Length: 198
Length: 198
DNA sequence: TCGTGGTTGGACTGCATGGTCCAGTTGTAG
DNA sequence: CTACAACTGGACCATGCAGTCCAACCACGA
Image (cartoon, rainbow over all chains, first blue to last red; front, side, top):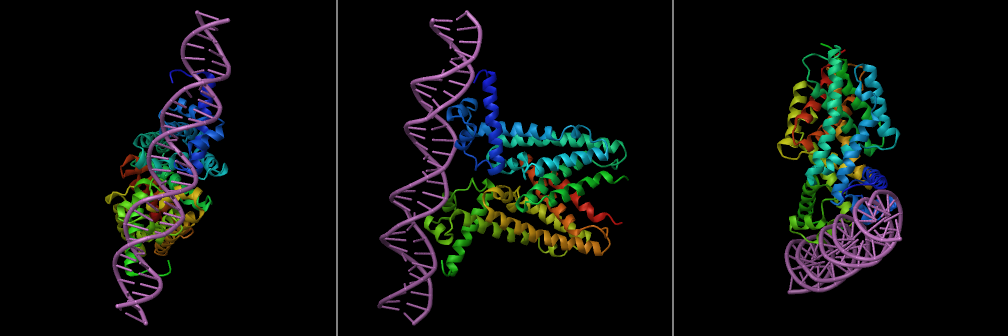
């Protein structure tokens, strides 16, 4: 691939984003390169020109892009999270990202299940995305802890993991129902951990 | 299909269980009928003899079976859940089912993600399994509530959904890491809802 | 103007997979 | 013993898919 021109970068990006949409809607297995090719008005050779490793490399690129995109959708709140109202704003932005925009699934979470067994490299990318996300939440929990809203002995990493789990699990339940209430119930209850001083 | 003899029922069951194993390990898309045929020492015609609807009918049968199996693995605790120690025993049985037996994923939860978009009928089966499970947990939460361990105003259904979400989400995080700690953190924190009287 | 390297189009291949078909076997009820 | 229905084996078909290949097309610097 050597170097990319501006035009090349734009084409590559178009492929990544469209593939992301298809995967979110139909899963990795349900997304064929021909679908992507048609939707992006490209050709087979371009797909393999930009992703010599084939489908798996493309999917990995999608995972990286979606991971960044997901964090971007939580800005600027996710870098604050020092007050309860900041957490609330963050919660609203997140639920809107998933539900309001008709996603009904987490671009990373849905990859996690499908990736874990079949593609270790992809699993590593997914784990990295979760890790970065968890780090931001952990920092927020720590700020709340310093402000006295969380018991001093509690481990911020575990609380952050529980909040992240509530999101992912809530989506798992909400998805087949096509109703946001389980997600909201799970997330709100997980956030109660921030209301329990000693 | 008309009627099944004892032998036929056993063959059918063998197919369902083996397919369940394969799906859990590789997903629906990653499970081919030829794999199933080889692992069960059967033939193509048998697969279509017992499941005339083809792969999708087979997968649906698997979902139903796994749903029942999953509840069975939580017996007898899941039908009690009237004391904190009963919840602890339930929690231990569940974590052992997932982690101790090397599953690292929920047979139903992993289907949920893959099914939601592609097969509405399967999504309905999955939603039903979640519903039955949630009902049992809801009953347990209600018992705790009557015993005074849960605030009277709280909605048991939402608490049960949050606990279920913690399980599913915890598994999503634990899976790529291959480490049970996120599952345990999420589940334990969700169970704190049972420690908060008014 | 010419050439080089990134870029694009699309035909083609090989393979895996879901699904069909029919012939043969086993079990069992009368 | 016979007949029928459940059961089993495996060859076969059609299709959809990832991946290959090569020829053509820009864009830009020399």
